[in-house]
Length: 227
Image (cartoon, rainbow, N blue to C red):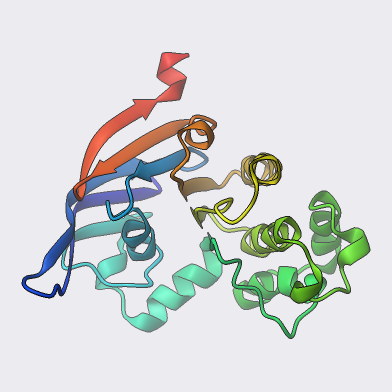
């Protein structure tokens, strides 16, 4: 089992009393499996993703990555986990504005110590960005920037890809194409994918679905079993 989340709890300060965002969330994710995380705004989707990525600390429960407890890691070990084993795709792209497309794509691989110019060239070609490799983020469309962000997350050959509303800033047609590409690349890399989305249509494209409501798991759907 690649990822095991057990009784995860996260609370944030509120105006009058603490707000329980996650109230005992548990699920498993096997290597190579794609899982969509859905729920209404405020249900805890992005919070859960950030906790799995080690970008925030839980107030209770466990997050086990290949048996290692992420919550028990210090900042240095969590940063190492993100560099080598976890790729993150943000809704806001989070590209480095001073780096061109080629350098942005290579960034994660360099941090992971797995940079290969030949592999990067193949990836940029698959991303459809060969003619844009020397451009900077501000010179790209939203769809192109998101493709760069996906390439950056996958260039380091992570075992788990976390994507937070990766098509949320794109129109429906562009978003569908970007998701097609991400699923194709994730499958080819044999990586697991945990994707936050508000779209039931996009969620149905993944193998499994997990729906959060009021900080708890409300629904689990196994598409493979249904098919």
